[in-house]
Image (cartoon, rainbow, N blue to C red):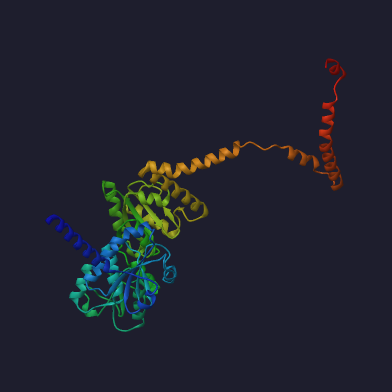
Length: 451
């Protein structure tokens, strides 16, 4: 009896905790459009049949609990975009799941990894002011330790400050923006003039030049990564949005070799020592393994090796010979920059056809590798049905062709001749049985004698 009571108590507690967690995420309907104006909302637009949405669901409840417990002003909700398709279209939902932070009249798309920490960090960053103040050296140093890349506006009111605020409102989905007085900066920082926009990263700082760097938003977008980063599939997608070409050392970190370490070191040196020459056009980094690169270029890249990707048009560049020295790597990158290096791939019609065929083959192979029986059922059954249909069509018996023959005979006759032919056929049909009966009734004389 005691065990039964204990189990019931545990069930009640579990149900209570479950309902408490669910309470942190609100189910939204078509009234949401009118009630959301005064709050900041983080909304998951989902479809009930979507596998990715189901995978996100427990993480989404963790996000709601985390933001609620931390005292964040962000309210967390979810909306069935198939049930409220009109509202989902108004918010620009094109796929599932779609995560948006709604702040006043603005809607910010979340494009990062679907983990609790990344989503919570995004919500806290975007929900706050676009530009945060750094009032002291201590606060500045604290932020330098927290962030690998730090954008800071230094100075008073100016047209540059207005441009900076606009860029911050646009790009806050990617990074933080701060403002500070000259007194709050470290003593090692020396700015030639004020106001100025400065990015602190890679152990140094670099100033925006309106004449050389053109648009401030474009400059911020290109500078929001460190000069050298570790690259995976998601990071490569993000790097593609900067408009830069991506120079990658493809290595195997699980089984590092001397050659892999040498290529990685060479790439890091180029990123740092040749920043002035290559930074505007290239992003540098390394990738562990060649699986993702192979699927991207529909080919085989050796490990270790160097490749340069242009994600905007799916072109890629390979060195004509193995990279052995710093000079060779710089020469290869320069040849890509000046257009003398041979480009492979692209987004032409032939490449698109190859991409469709490659993706189909990869999908089939992955299904067979993971579950051979399922692969045989999914692909074998339709092929079997199609084969049986083709066999039935090819071996079907033909109908009597007499009607076709008569039609062919009549082909080419005039209307009068065709009517006469039909009259003769009808007369023959009527006379035939009578003549047959007469023949049957009339016996041969020899037969009569026999009788």
